Length: 301
Image (cartoon, rainbow, N blue to C red; front, side, top):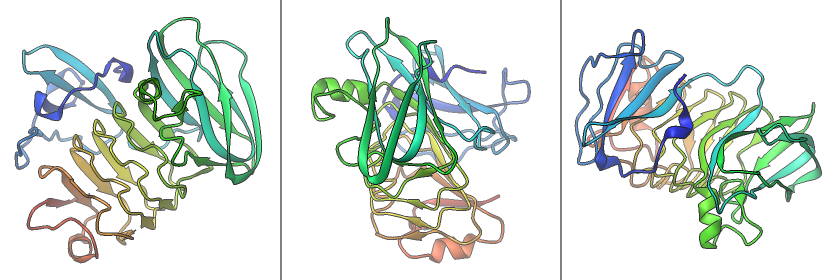
């Protein structure tokens, strides 16, 4: 498996994107999508199969892996934060609304932290200090019947400092998050859940999420792609806006989710491809507030 945490924040116009297929050592582009000013995309024959890997190439020719794209939710349904903590950011605070109980495993063989809450209207936090910089996977395990509400305006990426996300150091913590697996029992109806997580490259959504609220992924400029599960019925304003590195959006539902505002996909890169189920092209391109099909490429799969 390619290590997601080897990724770096880099402007999309400095990347050339490829799809690895077959034995994952060959680059086998099957065709090129319309190129924009940012990057070009080469499509491999296994584009939508699980465990297909993407990696990128700097303009100087040196390779650096972005990570593995797994288009199915994890089998255990847990929420995971893949982080790379540097010297000045070794004491993260994980914050989310909690109705019930959960355990936070910090990924460094220390004692996990239990958490409890009674309402999705109140933020609960857990603090941890790592002994050294490095790559860690924080795992949140929910008790049966419990529910998490991600973030809120003041808890932008779930990773903050006691001083808050608006401080320079707070943004450093926010930039520690490289991959987010949103598991079962997570509610994305709280606005601004993960916004402005500039280093977030990959997101995987559980298939029991029903809504993606306003500004949930706003400003996650390194996000490569996103798959909208069949369960999602509504996407809020600016929920997927200002994603300057986005290469594709894949919708699973045959019925287009309702976009509650015209800016749901605001500032979408012109070469971002929108995938929709076979036989639904007209439904999606004619749906209210969806990107203009005279500007963006829609592909049935």
